Image 1 (tube, helix red, strand yellow):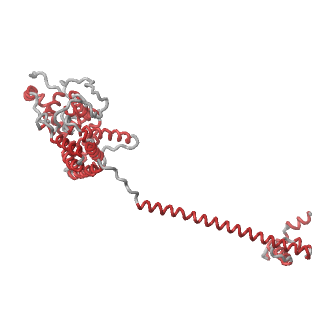
Image 2: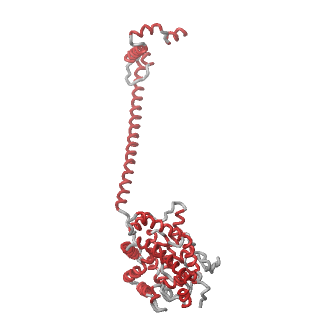
Image 3: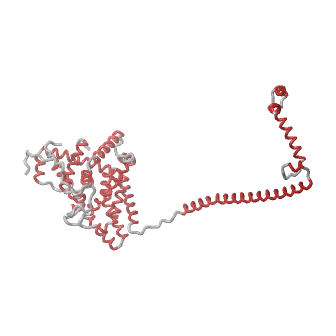
Length: 210
Length: 239
């Protein structure tokens, strides 16, 4: 028997709450004390209200989130996952689209190689043809020189060896180009020609200094 | 707190577990029945335990399809309660959903190791709690690098939608209350939180919690009381 003067401790009240909540009977002396002692009864009631509210709040939150639809979906998801339990692992086939894309990608990577190979071959052929043409031209010029040595004049011999072979047009070209240079060095407008006459030119000065 | 409350010693009876994690072999004392079995005769197997034994038999015979079929009944029996517990632990419905799924799949995979000495509920809850603790640890690691969220926006939206109050002010107050409650529970120590969650939201008796956690029953009661006292202090008497 619990004396009236000794109140129930809080841990005991929590015990009582847990016991009652699970549908078990309280110890008779404790139950009697809670019935008789107004202070302990009020404390117990307050504690029970607090814990009940806490529980109701938590359960309401969880129930709001885990609706029957969501629980059903969860159930189905669990069933799907259980299907895989105890079964040999499936070999997942490699995605076809990815393979095709890979092949396409590798094909597209091959194209520049062909282009490069073709360019290299073209370069090689070009160089070979060029070298062959140079060699034949050189052979021809040697033949010409031999022919000039046999009967041509000296000026013709000192001229650079060209494929054209004729020296007269070269002289005419030189004259023409000199005239062209002279014409370009002088001002083209009449107004400036007077100033040009007063202005000393590099060429006469250079010639005088020599 | 009342003045006549006996101050509990700081060192509660120490459990053999140093961590909060539920130990599968922590206690050797078999308990006769689970929460659902409390309504049955003492010593008799509860409905879910009987069902688990039947499924185990099917698995041992190699009848996987029938075992899967019957396991669905177990899922239906424990799904809601498991979701509540997991949600109280993780405070995120997506995480809780995954934890519950993982626990059921793990239970099915290891059902041949189930022994009747344990009520199925206790065995299952152990697995669930361990999964939740692992997830909490993983989240704590993640939160070192990322900003932690209290509850996902989707959760908040769902709860607001479920809230019957049309008044925005009342909904805001409810939201704040939820946040305050979550913060208060988060401030509980690991064992206190485990014991409180299992007793309060998991509908487990201190004895069952003792079986699940490996703590003494008296220690469970002490943790439960301390958790209640701390929550009352943090929430000011009203949740």
